[in-house]
Image: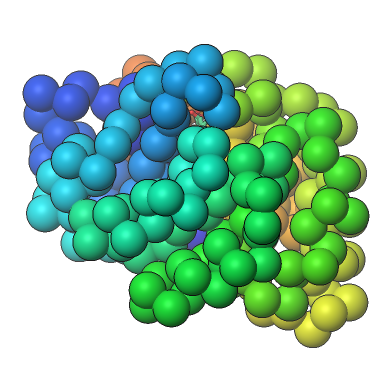
Length: 221
Ligand code: DX5
Ligand code: ZN
């Protein structure tokens, strides 16, 4: 099980330290939430901060593009240091060529589905992706509550990937905390994203990562 802390709620004045803290807690990846004010109402991180995160982080950067027509920015984010680029099904006119382009750039390719988007809408690209991201909140803001029906969607996503013989990662993003991490992991997720549960942990982000690792029965750094 991998943990990918979202830096969205971190103190950006101390970005390098905030990244080092979650790495000390055992973060496997760093999750970067890119929002454009169109696909989602919020505006957050762009390529400049992504590059800053790249310079601070030792682990792979897991870049979640919540932007309309993401094909316009793939190269920019690859250059900024993304190791994984995930695009939304709802934001892409031509999903298959977008996935192919990400791979051409030498980056792992992910596809994301919103809570209301059926998994069938990405079935045609599943054999070509390195990661499937199931959103467990409506994208746009951190700190939202986990949508309970996400667990059965993750279970179905697990069956679809297994049915294809795919070893793609199955990532779940939104409202994950130490209380529900084991349930999501049990449904077949291989990567858990968490923002507020980690950076808002009463003992700080190092313990925030450890708490989730412990909850899923993973070794604690
Ligand atoms: C939501 C983002 C998530 C989210 C994670 O649009 O993609 O990565 O902010 O944060 P929490 O764990 O606070 O839901
Ligand atoms: Zn995200």
